[in-house]
Image (cartoon, rainbow, N blue to C red; front, side, top):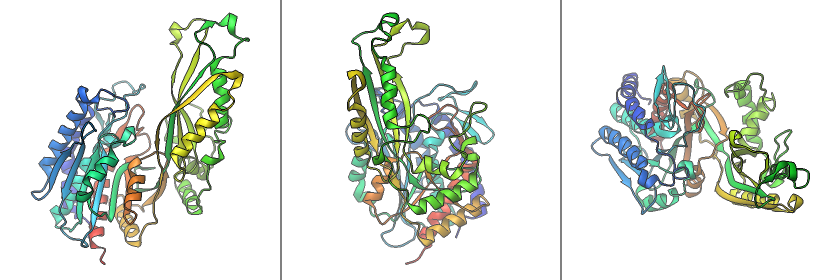
Length: 474
């Protein structure tokens, strides 16, 4: 039985009355993930974010629910909320997942906007972390509150909000192990850290890519020399870097050359990509802030879906060794250093991928250059188990009820380390992975926004699914 219309209106009102103002305050807090703020403990921003979100949560907990900020040594904190069961099968457990740490500020925000400056324009709330993933604690609790308000049964439920997801969730395994007796057995996992390909349907994530990151450094000189003296005699470090990158991917097509990183794509995921491609069409690339005249790598929508979900892809995410242009003299620079990010198909072992990338880049360096690749982080991908009939029906019903259209399914190009870990630890659990990161929301980049209408619809959709989970019978 779904949440009633009266409760749906009440939840919408609660979003506006208390959740949105709390999110506005949360956006103001520059609580960058530890990978981007090594001084996070002394800076205090993470603690401010935790205090802000838990204050709101405590005000909305029913009397039988509990909230604890769990701390293990010097690790990032974790918010753990428990709701006792009001129905469902004996031994059932539901876990809601989200995170409260943020990506760094990033440049390029349009005039009037900024990472720590919340601005609402209609249903869009701009600012860093609102959509990725500050909204998750509000959506999780309000979904459960909606069920309680209507007297609809739900299984024992826990809400887990971590604080280092954007750094690869390195603290999370220790917390899951520590809390295992309280988490118990899980039969449903609701992850709210994913995306949606449009704002008009409920989108369910079926796979996530992994990632292998590292720093490539190329050096041929111990110090810079006059470019008029050195060019043509000593190879420029950036030219050697170009040669090395060409070992990883084809500069003309972007296709990754390493066979170990490109396993066969499951036929079921190919069929899914074809359906999704037909549904989205040009929206697969027009959603990006393209310069005038820019074209996608292909106009075949099926190939675009597969490229961003089941194929590897290389990006250069940072660089050292270059002076600012205003300070650049005629110098052959001593070194070039690049941050590399290789997205990996869900089935590829990221540790093995990092070793392959390192061996490929460091073998037989051109001109005898000093070449090092230092892995800086890996996270596994994830491929969802097949949906059970009850969950497929529940998602379809929720989407038609809350969005007015059928549910749609697609893999995501990003990484949620928690999902692979949970998949291994709870092999019998069902997964409802969804989110609000849709066209233009631009998580990790400038002008990130949360589509509030989608967040409200998603809250009610999740409530409906959790109610169906409790009512699914033996």
